[in-house]
Image 1 (cartoon, one colour):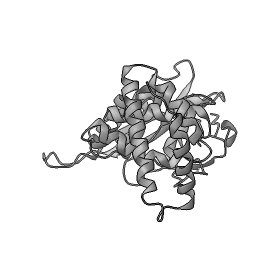
Image 2 (tube, rainbow, N blue to C red):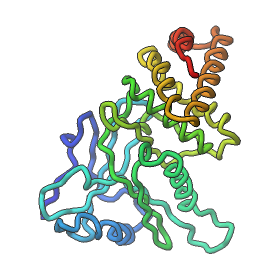
Image 3 (tube, one colour):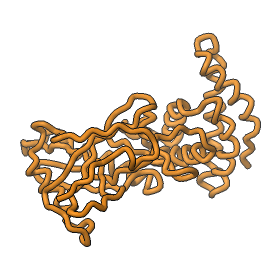
Image 4 (cartoon, rainbow, N blue to C red):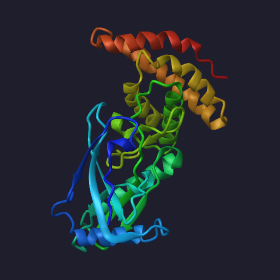
Length: 290
């Protein structure tokens, strides 16, 4: 049996990879997890010879932005040495309550519901394909590992895709978690993927409130190097259809409110934020949404 380890050479950006023997201590037994994994992998790559219940786990970290958290990745063992990007998956497990009491909190169902809301809201353009493997005791969330870098939002298309992501999240009344590590750029000019599964607040009361919260928090990604992309991106987005036109008008209104609020508190804002607000103040006049 030949096992090809997950290596940094598979990536086009810096990563840290550490092979780990078993990620979950006493949270679940290997036999239980392997049994569930077989329900998925037994139907995958049927043309390739694979050893059942043979898996390797990795801890993968994309360093460089914000609070860096690792992700657990699993790869099945193939007899051949022809491994590819499609052979690696992120894996998360959640325990179901042991008690049948109605009031017992079902953490697994809670996470599954949140992930399903993200899938429905963001779609395949912004959220990874997701598989749920379940037993009476466990939920496994399996997603193809995305070999994409953390988005630095320094390309024009990044801003367009960020606006599109805000549109879908706000239409669904959900608030995303704007940790830099949760946003991956597919390729140059490609889509923007949101990859978090662990955070989402209660549903917002309206699209207005959802966009207000999402826009304010997403401003952490806007700086003096990409602010000039906003006018062209927002105008282009507004021309897609009637829904995006209405959204873009609301986006512009809330962006103006954000800028005005910062101006009223100039004494307390940081020099970095002041520089960004000054640029936004200049470029906002370029945005003509009709």
